[in-house]
Image 1 (cartoon, rainbow, N blue to C red):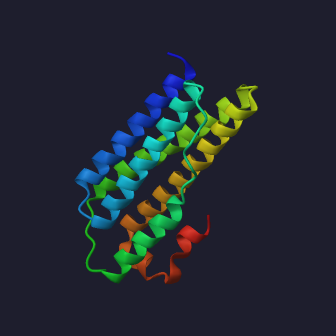
Image 2: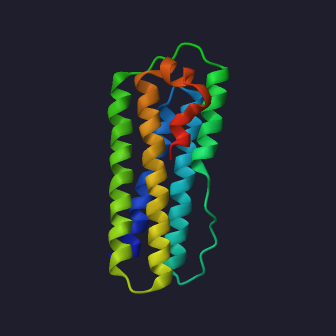
Length: 161
C-alpha cells in the first residue's frame, strides 16, 4: 500500500469513527459537530484521492471552528441539563489521539516529499487536523463541565485558536 492509499484509509477510518460518535450522541449539538467532522474527513479523503489520481484538488478550506461555535451558541440558547456518560470522555480522547496522529503523519509526509504541490496539500491537511484536535479539546472540556463551559461569555474557547 502506498502512502496516499494509507492516508485515504486513515481518513476513511476517521470519517467512520465520527459517524459512530454522531449516531450514539444524546446531544443534538454534539451530533451535528461529529457529523460535521465526519464530512471534513470525507473531504480530506477526496483531496488525497485527487492527489493520488493526479487531478487538481478542488476542495476548499472549511471553517469548522466557526461552524462549531455557532452550534455551541445554539446549545447555549437551549441549555438545560446536560448529562453525559463518563465513558464518552475516553471515546472523545481517542478521537483526539487520532487527530494528533493524523496531523503528525501529514507533517512528516510534507517534510519527506519534494513536490511543492504535495508538500502544500500535506501541510494543509495537517493544519485541518490541528483544528479538529482543538475542537475535540473543547468538546472534552464541555462534556466534563457543560454548564461552566456554556456560561463562559462569547465562547472564548474556540476564539483562542
